Length: 118
Image 1 (cartoon, rainbow, N blue to C red):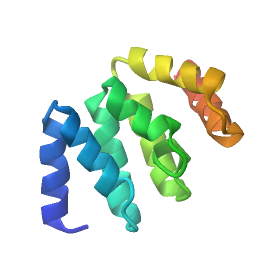
Image 2 (cartoon, helix red, strand yellow; image 1 turned 180 degrees about the horizontal axis):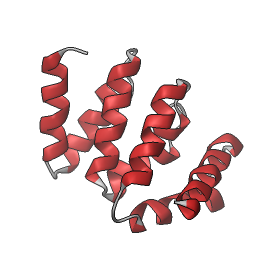
Image 3 (cartoon, rainbow, N blue to C red; image 1 turned 135 degrees about the horizontal axis):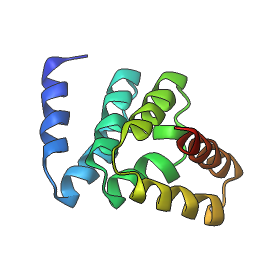
């Protein structure tokens, strides 16, 4: 992956404003490049705030729901590595209980099960 892209994603990860999350979501998680999507999803998880976590949990085709197994697994591993899992568990619960897409709900259930085992 291009070093400039890595530096841009890292800089956006360091910012705590909602615009940084929006840019990561719009450009990073929608990239045709698997490596960019993977790095972006991991960055969003590392932010560990509601708005960044919900991008990688509730959206079809992004984060844990990415069609690339490497992107999905990388995102899941980053979630499992979080020290404070409170917010991610709340979003997983909401997704399981309220999301309209059965596949997204099932992925959330699977991640929640993995968290229970970790």
